[in-house]
Amino acid sequence: MAIQRTFSIIKPDATRRNLTGKINAKFEEAGLRVVAQKRIHLSKAQAGEFYKVHAERPFYDELCEFMASAPIVAQVLEGEDAIAKNREVMGATNPADADAGTIRAEFAESVGENSVHGSDAPETAAEEIAYFFSGLELVG
Ligand code: CMP
Image (cartoon, rainbow, N blue to C red; front, side, top):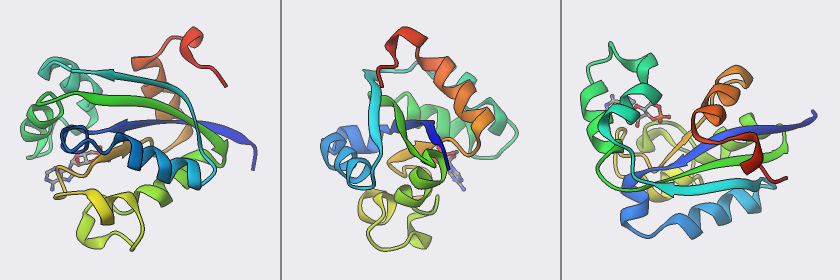
């Protein structure tokens, strides 16, 4: 597998509890490098645009409220097979189903407030990175 980049968010439930460093340590221990990172406070409209693929889901409004409720840390992670590796390190969306040692098993509070987001495919990774970062901000 070639070196790949993926998009990651450390979500409001985690920034509120000051967990950015602990979560980054999990990424780094798994061989992922943080090649771009910024802490921002999304508006509800910006969160809605980012998650528009979920617009028809019953939890969409709650999700947008939550993502705008406190700062997030938007990141680009780089490494061998980064998309799959990041998903492995995050664990299942619902922390009740997440394997021991994963970020969501250790830190997530619920299926909605689940500490991290990670891209699910190369096309979404490219789109999500471009939503938050310019090429100049990606420093490998
Ligand atoms: P994420 O990986 O960021 O992708 C979509 C998000 O929607 C997901 O993580 C959760 O935060 C949220 N989500 C998924 N399912 C539910 C649900 N059943 N109730 C509330 N939020 C959910």
